[in-house]
Length: 498
Image (tube, rainbow, N blue to C red; front, side):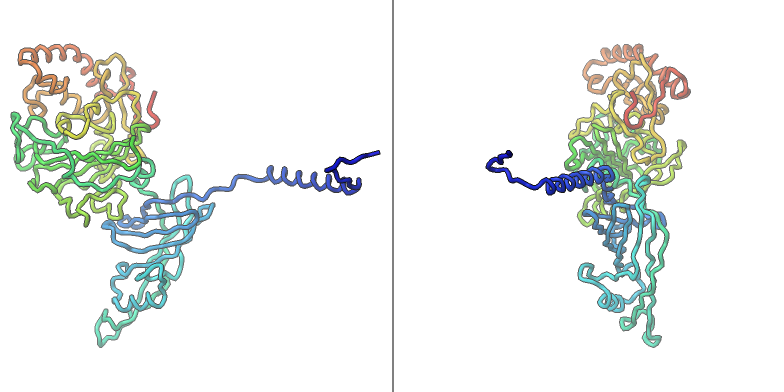
């Protein structure tokens, strides 16, 4: 006899069988679903700035929240071309509704444009004219590109000939927009910001002065020779070497939220068109370096003619590379016309000079009082350095990894300008532009040189010359014949070579 416990409910055998069958079916369904299911593809992020291949004078700035997309297109000076809003799905399909600013239809009379906006506009985009058709793109994950079409606004102005053209009483007719095939590629500045953080706006005048002295006397005007000249391979202009020009500064910039990133900008004055005005410079270059990963970004202004940094932006600052109006100062990637060829910002292949590491130490920049830069000249072989981040230069820099070379006990020596300029200039060159006299080596640093008497220094220089003679000769040989086995020329890419 079956006796049920207090909490047991007796069920007919047939009902229990049905329940077991249902549970089995349910469990099988769960197993099948688990077997057949695959992780849902995430909606790709297309946040950032994008270049338009059919109109390089404009860029598209995209913001995103989940599948919702919004943004704007701007010119180099930051002025608005159009706004947009739309969606992106997990497959990367982007559909955007576009709203034009009158500046893209400047022939339209203000009143006629305003009337068209009143008839077709919406409250979320005040003062803008909605396009009749949408812009469609497909995001290519492998190439990080948006491929589709942009719209060319086509407007007809109907006017009374008696009133003359573009009279405020004229009317505007919005024709069907013309789609133009286009490929959008995320900008270098946007990729840099994604990995190293945003670089904020800054002023050159907030930086550390890089003084020019002649026989230790400070100079306020360009001079023919100086104690610690700038080390750019500049030509003589206006009868004087450009290397001895006062007024330049070195600025340390903090990338907010990225303590491992070092960002420095150098604001340079040249002898050509020299100006005593503190905010006027001929050239601004900036390097952002992640000390943990080695990723490095280079930014460059247009060189040559002087410009007033206080007038670039309404704030009086130099815009961030990711600002809407970044184009007023920071140059896009273009072909390099130098002897080494390649590409770079405004055609400058930065990693030709910055081949051994992201920063270059010289006694000139060593004068900066607010930045500890002495270690720059002592990059170790193990220090990470992505010399060609986002393929800006089309090729990585190279370093020599030879063993038993006294110089590389402290320094990393790179191919490129390191070979044909820096190493001989810092060690053996008798050129008075590089030192006060032919025996004043930059090795060891100047404070060690100036700490003793002239006789003691002569002895020190003699000892250094003997110790480093063979090392310098080996470097010179490898610069001329970099393919030799004992040079161990190695691409300085990412991750760092062993």
